[in-house]
Amino acid sequence: MVKKAYLLMIFVLAAFQARSQCTQSLGTPIVNETFGAGAAPVGPPLAAGITNLPYINAECPETQGQYSIVNYSAGCYNGAWLTVEDHTDPGNGYFMLVNASLQPSDFFVQTVNGLCDGTTYQFGAWLVNVYNSGGVLPDVTFSIEKTDGTILQTYDTGPIATLAVAKWLPYSFFFTMPVGVTSVVIRMHNNAPGGVGNDIGLDDITFTPAGPQTTIGITGFTGTTLNNPCYQNISFYSSVAACYVANGYQWQTSADAVNWTDIPGATNAGYTPPLTTAGTYYYRMNVAQNGNIGNVSCRVNSNVLTIIYQPLLPPFSQSITAQICPGTSYLLPSGKTVDSTGLYSDTVRYKQGGCDSLITGLNLTVYNKPDLGQPKGLCFGDTVLLSPGTFVSYLWQDGSTLPTYMATNAGTYWVKVTYQNGCSVSDTVAVKLIGCLPAKIPNTFTPNGDGVNDTWLIDGLQGYTNCEVFIYNRWGQLVFKSTGYSKPWDGTYKNKNVPFGTYYYVIDLKNNTPPVSGNVTVIR
Image 1 (cartoon, rainbow, N blue to C red):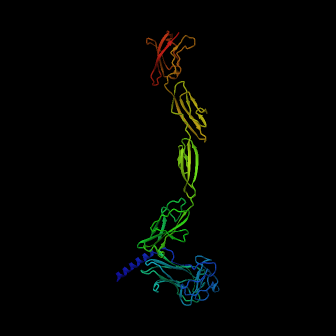
Image 2: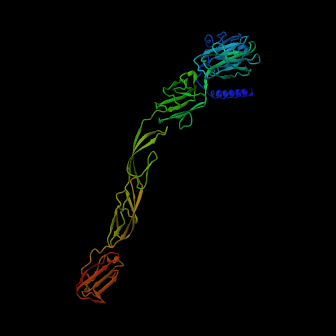
Image 3: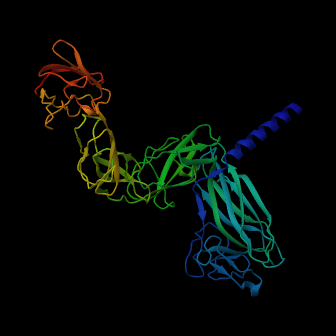
């Protein structure tokens, strides 16, 4: 006996847990009685069969057992009733105002068809005690019955207390359809007798499918509203808590988040919406026991995703011509840098929305760099012309501002040039003396003291301070030798004039070039 009781407790606990998992999300109400709305203070009566109370076309049903449909109640029963407005639409919406009958009675009854067995539903309504102090308190029983009158489940509100200010209170409960049952009667019964008090307002009666917690989201995005101005491809995912043996899915779309349409073929746990025209679109997912998803009375809804597509701005093309100095770079609109001459295409983003929509052509010219060339050699006594190219202005190392510069000595030369856009760039070149032979070595001279051609003068040789000069007579006797050539040969040997004749020379510049030899004639 203890073992059976223990097993029963486990079964009840498991059933309770399974049921609680199937009450986390709601679907679209099958019954959604709001009693309508209108500008007139009193609305039309309910359809036949919904209530057994007589209808009165008045703002205050002051006879016991009557009801009216009103959007505002104030001052009824000589002020004994509270001021009450519609629960969801104050000032315009209607609600049912009941002056309870002397005997407990039903005041709302409706048959609901096309349900799914095994599916959980929520039955609920909003009630308000309209009597302002004491008296008989309303006490309402909600019941769900088979169409033959068999009671399947009930829920009692208990006495509804009197408040100083009218306050709508919600009452609801969950119920799971038995196997084989697809139609039920929902009933609201006032258990208290009429008399002083027991006056009640009723609004927003619902009978709604319930199911597992169902959440959808946008892959790679946090939040339920996505502004998609660039028309990027997006996808939706879903998360469904345990409830059904097997889930059935149906995605829906809406233009106003009120009226929903099934998306054909969108029956998987995820969905990729198609790209569409500008506008705001809403999406949600329905879940039901697999096999029941086609029945709107058996499925629950997820949260809603909002996708906003802004009107596409027309492509905007712009051509830009720019020049930069060599060694610098140019910043394209997208943030990319370039540093060489060419035509560039770049994609930038509109400030609003960040779409890749602006295509720009960037005819970029990099100014020529001043070029003084490679290091240069200079023969003693010669000159080298330095020319960097054509620019707006020039500044040389010695302050010269001419386009070219004549280098006459070894050294380091530089020029700073300025371009049309005002930027400046410099270049430097080294000039050094090289082992050049004198342009002309005289083959004769006349050391006769007349002041003309009295020495063997070799132009340019004075610059080679380490050179060695040797002069021999025809018998090979050395008659002149010097290191450097600061003092040319005057045709003497040991301070005596050498005789008329031909002499032979060897000149070694001492710069790793071969010695130069030849002859010179002394004429007297």
